[in-house]
Image (tube, rainbow, N blue to C red; front, side):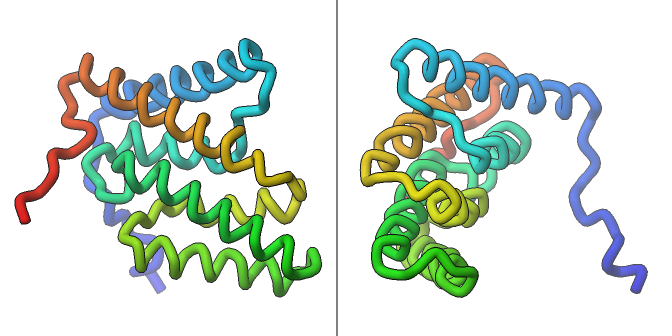
Length: 164
């Protein structure tokens, strides 16, 4: 039973953890401020989890811009289609999350926080414009802030393209 509670993540210097937290603060604050400026909702709960990946493990493939933006987009699209086709029932929500995970994996744009996006769609029953506000706009702002933030901290983000 003890192996379930082992810490497999390498130790991080407290300063690095504080910097990651500051990155999340700046990113969510930027999206929130932009919400007030444009008058469209740009924040959603899965973006907090996206910030964990972008600022704490920027070198992970799951943190890369294509995964952040593409993962949220695909998961939202799946959620919207499933919500239009199926009733708002527990099994339909499960089907939407499973389909979103499968499609992200097939497209190689897996972003774990995006797995929660179909739950947001079913809970709020938004229109098609949800793809633009908050999903695309919000995720693009997170990636832009992450890119600028890591440039100042000399962290490589996004990762360079691997040669074919």
